[in-house]
Image (cartoon, rainbow, N blue to C red; front, side, top):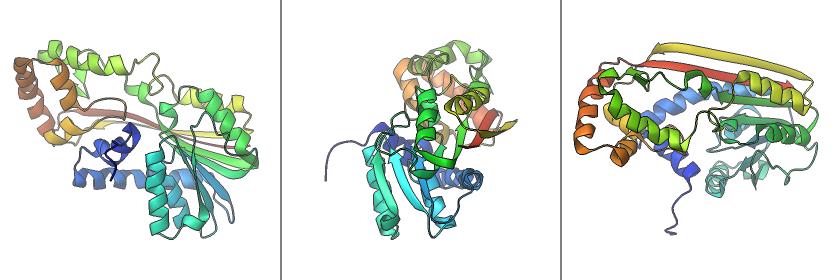
Length: 291
């Protein structure tokens, strides 16, 4: 067995986004199945078509397509070879490898895929990691056949960022605000709200990117929710990484807080989490288009 560590994408998708908690993994995956189904519904999957799943990750969309069609062929594409190996193993175990291709590629450079060669392009939470989103949409357009369909899902993180100075992860942290500033600085250093691809776009930008790429029919649905956070598991909050490029809360605290600050922060915030005193601000966009 190789001692080479998994890349950040594999480690996050298969572990860090769940905080290493099996029950939370089941909860998260359960919440993603409706997203998968909506992306595939908007894609209008037909018979004997080829679907390119860009940034396939753990294969949620791609394997969902196999469930919906006995004739679809799927191209799994991702920048992570480890994830491609993972989904290839799953395809072999489920006897789907003969209808699958596996191509290492970024959304911005799909040159390994020929012009006008696929019927559908899908993505789920991929463009939030893409620097040149205009280029990505141009690539989606290029590889699609005439009347081919694009169907994507993206969280609009700009909706809830930056948080007010006295708010952290939806909790009022006014009494420990000086401590919180040090934790927030860790995340802002790694992902600048003004420039980072996770935060620097909204649903209007998605529409503009699709139109500029040449899509002749474009639809967008934005779902916005502001609601109480029902998370009451402090350990889970500590150990979940928001995305592959940033640390867990526990790791950020260890990096910048003194022992006294560490204890003060936990003493204040943990009771709020366990009492479900936080709020969630969430915006999710579905875009589908026809070439």
